[in-house]
Image (cartoon, rainbow, N blue to C red; front, side, top):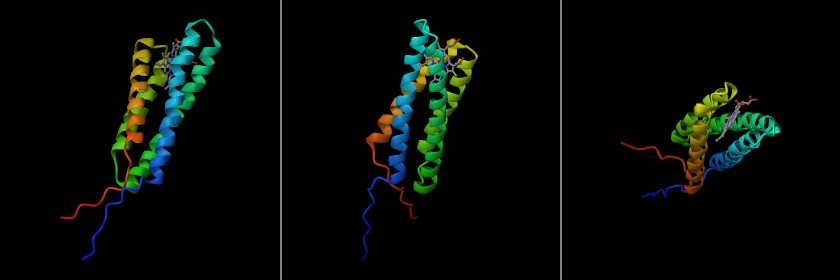
Length: 136
Ligand code: HEM
Protein backbone atom coordinates (compact mmCIF):
# COMPACT_ATOMS: atom_id res chain seq x y z
CA UNK A 1 0.00 0.00 0.00
CA UNK A 2 1.38 3.38 -0.99
CA UNK A 3 1.72 5.99 1.74
CA UNK A 4 2.01 9.72 1.16
CA UNK A 5 4.00 11.99 3.46
CA UNK A 6 2.67 15.53 3.87
CA UNK A 7 4.69 18.11 1.94
CA UNK A 8 6.12 20.51 4.54
CA UNK A 9 8.37 22.50 2.18
CA UNK A 10 7.87 26.27 2.29
CA UNK A 11 6.84 27.32 -1.23
CA UNK A 12 8.80 29.89 -3.29
CA UNK A 13 5.72 32.13 -3.51
CA UNK A 14 5.66 32.21 0.30
CA UNK A 15 9.30 33.42 0.32
CA UNK A 16 8.29 36.14 -2.16
CA UNK A 17 5.45 37.17 0.20
CA UNK A 18 7.89 37.29 3.11
CA UNK A 19 10.22 39.55 1.12
CA UNK A 20 7.39 41.88 0.03
CA UNK A 21 5.84 42.10 3.53
CA UNK A 22 9.31 42.87 5.02
CA UNK A 23 10.01 45.63 2.46
CA UNK A 24 6.49 46.99 2.95
CA UNK A 25 7.08 47.15 6.73
CA UNK A 26 10.36 49.06 6.32
CA UNK A 27 8.59 51.54 3.98
CA UNK A 28 5.65 52.12 6.33
CA UNK A 29 7.96 52.61 9.34
CA UNK A 30 9.41 55.63 7.51
CA UNK A 31 6.02 57.36 7.46
CA UNK A 32 5.73 58.48 11.10
CA UNK A 33 9.44 59.43 10.97
CA UNK A 34 8.89 61.74 7.97
CA UNK A 35 5.70 63.08 9.56
CA UNK A 36 7.77 63.86 12.67
CA UNK A 37 10.33 65.70 10.52
CA UNK A 38 7.47 67.75 9.04
CA UNK A 39 5.88 68.47 12.42
CA UNK A 40 9.31 69.62 13.70
CA UNK A 41 9.07 72.43 11.14
CA UNK A 42 11.19 70.99 8.30
CA UNK A 43 8.99 71.08 5.20
CA UNK A 44 11.23 68.59 3.35
CA UNK A 45 9.45 66.06 5.58
CA UNK A 46 6.24 66.52 3.56
CA UNK A 47 7.93 65.57 0.27
CA UNK A 48 9.55 62.54 1.93
CA UNK A 49 6.21 61.55 3.50
CA UNK A 50 4.47 61.85 0.13
CA UNK A 51 7.15 59.73 -1.60
CA UNK A 52 6.89 57.24 1.27
CA UNK A 53 3.11 57.16 0.86
CA UNK A 54 3.45 56.33 -2.86
CA UNK A 55 6.01 53.61 -2.11
CA UNK A 56 4.01 52.14 0.78
CA UNK A 57 0.72 51.95 -1.13
CA UNK A 58 2.46 50.54 -4.24
CA UNK A 59 4.04 47.80 -2.12
CA UNK A 60 0.59 47.07 -0.71
CA UNK A 61 -0.73 46.43 -4.22
CA UNK A 62 2.30 44.25 -5.06
CA UNK A 63 1.60 42.29 -1.86
CA UNK A 64 -2.02 41.87 -2.95
CA UNK A 65 -0.92 40.40 -6.32
CA UNK A 66 1.45 37.97 -4.55
CA UNK A 67 -1.38 36.81 -2.27
CA UNK A 68 -3.63 36.23 -5.31
CA UNK A 69 -0.89 33.96 -6.72
CA UNK A 70 -0.68 32.15 -3.35
CA UNK A 71 -4.45 31.73 -3.27
CA UNK A 72 -4.58 30.24 -6.77
CA UNK A 73 -1.44 28.07 -6.50
CA UNK A 74 -1.52 26.99 -2.83
CA UNK A 75 -5.26 27.30 -2.19
CA UNK A 76 -4.74 29.59 0.83
CA UNK A 77 -7.13 32.55 0.90
CA UNK A 78 -6.31 34.13 4.27
CA UNK A 79 -3.15 36.01 3.16
CA UNK A 80 -5.26 37.66 0.42
CA UNK A 81 -8.08 38.58 2.83
CA UNK A 82 -5.62 40.05 5.37
CA UNK A 83 -3.77 41.99 2.67
CA UNK A 84 -7.00 43.26 1.10
CA UNK A 85 -8.05 44.74 4.48
CA UNK A 86 -4.60 46.34 4.83
CA UNK A 87 -4.63 47.78 1.29
CA UNK A 88 -8.11 49.25 1.81
CA UNK A 89 -6.91 50.87 5.06
CA UNK A 90 -3.80 52.25 3.32
CA UNK A 91 -5.91 53.68 0.50
CA UNK A 92 -8.22 55.44 2.98
CA UNK A 93 -5.06 56.56 4.80
CA UNK A 94 -3.65 58.03 1.60
CA UNK A 95 -6.79 60.08 0.87
CA UNK A 96 -7.13 61.16 4.52
CA UNK A 97 -3.54 62.48 4.30
CA UNK A 98 -4.29 64.33 1.06
CA UNK A 99 -7.42 65.83 2.64
CA UNK A 100 -5.51 66.85 5.79
CA UNK A 101 -8.00 64.86 7.90
CA UNK A 102 -5.49 64.21 10.69
CA UNK A 103 -8.22 63.08 13.14
CA UNK A 104 -8.50 59.98 10.89
CA UNK A 105 -5.02 59.92 9.37
CA UNK A 106 -3.04 59.62 12.62
CA UNK A 107 -4.98 56.80 14.36
CA UNK A 108 -5.43 54.89 11.08
CA UNK A 109 -1.68 55.25 10.41
CA UNK A 110 -0.86 53.71 13.81
CA UNK A 111 -3.42 50.91 13.27
CA UNK A 112 -2.11 50.18 9.77
CA UNK A 113 1.47 49.90 11.01
CA UNK A 114 0.34 47.58 13.84
CA UNK A 115 -1.58 45.39 11.34
CA UNK A 116 1.46 45.11 9.09
CA UNK A 117 3.67 44.15 12.09
CA UNK A 118 1.19 41.33 12.85
CA UNK A 119 1.34 40.17 9.20
CA UNK A 120 5.15 40.31 9.27
CA UNK A 121 5.30 38.09 12.38
CA UNK A 122 2.70 35.75 10.89
CA UNK A 123 4.39 35.19 7.52
CA UNK A 124 7.80 34.58 9.11
CA UNK A 125 6.47 32.37 11.93
CA UNK A 126 4.91 29.62 9.86
CA UNK A 127 5.98 27.75 6.75
CA UNK A 128 3.30 27.76 4.08
CA UNK A 129 2.64 24.56 2.27
CA UNK A 130 0.06 23.63 -0.30
CA UNK A 131 -3.29 22.75 1.28
CA UNK A 132 -4.00 19.08 0.62
CA UNK A 133 -7.37 18.40 -0.99
CA UNK A 134 -9.78 16.63 1.38
CA UNK A 135 -11.23 13.34 0.19
CA UNK A 136 -14.75 12.36 1.15
C1 HEM B 1 1.54 56.91 11.97
C2 HEM B 1 1.76 57.14 10.70
C3 HEM B 1 1.54 58.48 10.04
C4 HEM B 1 1.52 59.74 10.54
C5 HEM B 1 1.77 60.17 11.99
C6 HEM B 1 1.23 60.65 9.45
C7 HEM B 1 1.14 62.03 9.54
C8 HEM B 1 0.89 62.91 8.50
C9 HEM B 1 0.89 64.33 8.57
C10 HEM B 1 1.15 65.17 9.86
C11 HEM B 1 0.58 64.82 7.36
C12 HEM B 1 0.47 66.28 6.94
C13 HEM B 1 -0.99 66.65 6.81
C14 HEM B 1 -1.17 68.10 6.44
O1 HEM B 1 -0.24 68.72 5.91
O2 HEM B 1 -2.28 68.60 6.69
C15 HEM B 1 0.42 63.70 6.47
C16 HEM B 1 0.12 63.79 5.14
C17 HEM B 1 0.00 62.72 4.28
N1 HEM B 1 0.13 61.37 4.62
FE1 HEM B 1 0.60 60.66 6.44
N2 HEM B 1 1.07 59.91 8.32
C18 HEM B 1 1.25 58.59 8.64
C19 HEM B 1 1.18 57.51 7.79
C20 HEM B 1 0.87 57.59 6.45
C21 HEM B 1 0.75 56.45 5.57
C22 HEM B 1 0.96 54.99 5.98
C23 HEM B 1 0.42 56.94 4.34
C24 HEM B 1 0.17 56.17 3.06
C25 HEM B 1 -0.55 55.11 3.00
C26 HEM B 1 0.33 58.38 4.44
C27 HEM B 1 -0.01 59.25 3.41
C28 HEM B 1 -0.07 60.62 3.49
C29 HEM B 1 -0.35 61.51 2.36
C30 HEM B 1 -0.61 61.09 0.90
C31 HEM B 1 -0.29 62.82 2.86
C32 HEM B 1 -0.49 64.10 2.06
C33 HEM B 1 0.87 64.57 1.55
C34 HEM B 1 0.77 65.86 0.76
O3 HEM B 1 -0.10 66.69 1.05
O4 HEM B 1 1.62 66.06 -0.12
N3 HEM B 1 0.61 58.73 5.74
N4 HEM B 1 0.60 62.54 7.20
